[in-house]
Image: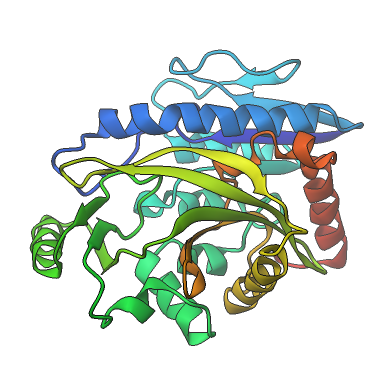
Length: 328
């Protein structure tokens, strides 16, 4: 029996680090991200529970006391840190599947405490690159991938975005109507101690790509439509995702399949379920905004939509890698 530990940071009791914006407190950020986290956690657990020969443990906490189906709830001890809890549980299981934001180095630290042998997901090196939005864009641009950096000196760009360089879910992201205003916001928030990213706002259709990165292939799983809004004060909100909304065998599919392979080549060590946020620009086509080196909310419902159990495939790939002696 293979023992799998599923841990989602917020529902498992973690506290989100500062979002880099005094107007967004930690509780507000957690409240915004918790429903997304729970949906991902439950989707992973439900897929795993359908795999023969697998027992599933799911992290629970006072914030989210119930776990799906026949999964076994496991809870942190009194006063135990998120990292100590994950390290302890990982040691009791064969595989640990962790969902955590990159914010404040959380995902990287989780990978470190779990260790590559039990870790289901991207390598430490890939997480390090993808955890910084600016570093990601520079890496991708260097490999010929279109990013917002290509728009920095385009005269018709009217809006600019300032966001935490390691943020998640659109928290503390603001859209400004001039570069001057954006630079002022970037300076204020950077001075406050949080690393911030500034980039042109790219007009177009907000999409995301879900890809499966295994030992021998990079596969485009789905093209998803993102629901994003910007209020009158410029605060950006992520309002959800329509999973598998655009057919991968349609006109855009081959373009985005090539893009997925380009991204995987540019960031070695991407493994498992990986998300790419992008904008389909009317003239330039796909422009990559960021790479998520972990499960995203686009995983929710995707196995059913595709008619295949993605968790089973990822467990199989993990077993293959371990048998070959890779360090993950």
